[in-house]
Amino acid sequence: MMVCFIATLGQILLLGCISFTAANSKTCQIYAAVGESVTLAFNYEGLAKSHTLRWTHDTTIIFLRQQGRVTIGKPEDITTTGSILLKSVKLQSEGIYRGDALHPNGTLAKTWTGQLCVMEKVSKPRLSYICDTNTVNLNCHVSKPQGLFFSWTLDKTTLSSETRQTLSISLSQLKEKSSFSCSVANKVSAESSETVQPICKAHMLCFKPNIVLGVLAGGAVLIFVLLIIITVLCCSYRRTKTKMQLSDKGEFNLLSVNKGEAESITRYENIHNVESCPSPSPQPSPRACYENISKLDVKTETKPPQLSTAAEGQQPSPVPKPRTKNAKTPHI
Image 1 (tube, rainbow, N blue to C red):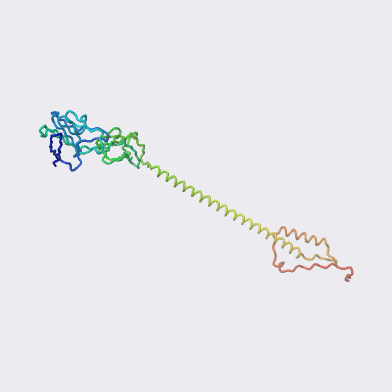
Image 2 (cartoon, helix red, strand yellow; image 1 turned 90 degrees about the vertical axis):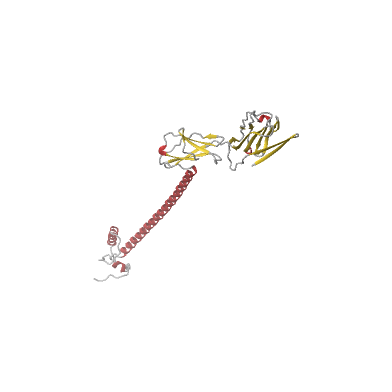
């Protein structure tokens, strides 16, 4: 690919043809961090003021000096050998740079071409770990991990085979105070994390805080529900027991009343079923009747009240009428 530049200085016409190959892919020869300064080394020892020195960024001329006179750029940005200093580069500063030194007759004395890539510095990583059943899993946290290089250190020894962002180590390989650190780097910078000593035991499960809180909350709810169920069952049991006690007491009182009524009926019937007192004389002896009634009462108290079939069928005996004064005494 040929690109021609034409510069007019007064009445002098300069024609220089610059040839360079445009890279189809991004292949950087020089790397710089954002905000840093970088020098593109030209290193032409035979450079004189009579030479024409020209620097281009892609297709834009950023420096031009002819016959000792600078028309584009700043003289202090060029060294005596023709190298150029790029100050405080930005992401827009990356691209293809070319330096050319021409003899006074316009022929090419020296040329240099290179591609500059500008990158941001990496941030300091943060190391975390999670204990699993038989392993410990480590993670090297960093913003924008794309295109970065990771490395791991165990007890100040670099693990050359580990280049991923995460690391898993068996608990059997850990010592009592094993320490880990991770490093992250790109072409322009590198940072390392703080040293971490994982505290894990074999067959011990480590959970995230939100999982632990969820399990604890679920257990608390379950215990609360169980307490409510137990309280309801206890209240129901007490209520049922109280009802049963009241029912038993009512039945006992009813039986007592029935028993009392039966005794009263038995006494009443026994009193009226007493045989008539023997009366050798026309009038019965009151004392004999009283003794018979007393004996009957004693028998009734000692013997449980029982109603005989004969007594149930008999009618109460009629009470004898008293004799009148005018009644005649029967002859014997």
